[in-house]
Length: 216
Image 1: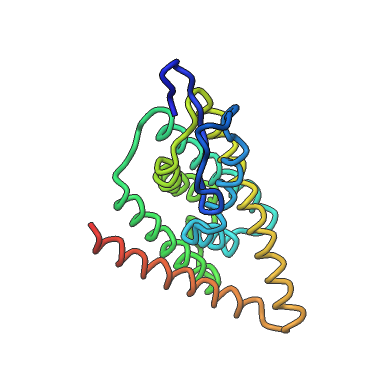
Image 2: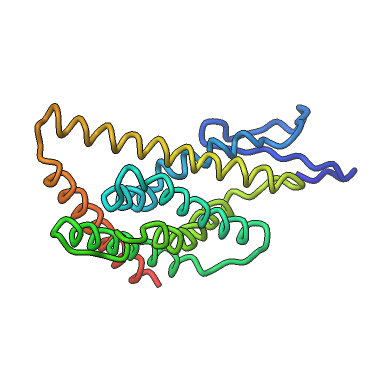
């Protein structure tokens, strides 16, 4: 809100707190709310999570950190360009390419498990960085619907990015824990688990790609 005296107040309304009282003083921008939004956006952004899962299937634990970091750096760059520099791409093509990226990772993972060599397996950070640039525009589309507090845009964006990164780390830890549990407790073959996960990523990506292409 911008009052007649020039004072600006930012309030983030959410389903759990969907109203505000104009006769109560409001102070500062709700910056920490953007950290929570970042965590929630990656946790409930299933296409982004499946991309991270695809990277987990392709990359050894030793190289996973640098690969995830490359993905984070890339989507942070395009998210900043879109929100601060007003450099955007049309939403539907971006969402379609994100879906196609899942199909590519699934195919690469299955090829690697079959004994083949792939570009993603040799240079996973490069593929993660390239598609991370596209995923950043997807994050920007969601963030543009919410908006950023005036004069605090950089801080809000930084906290949103940190939230996304924390959410990714939580998901990677969950994947490792679930995989360990399936192998040790359920006594499933690691190859069977990875194959099933790769097909799951591919099927979801195919469904979303068709759905999003038809929505053009």
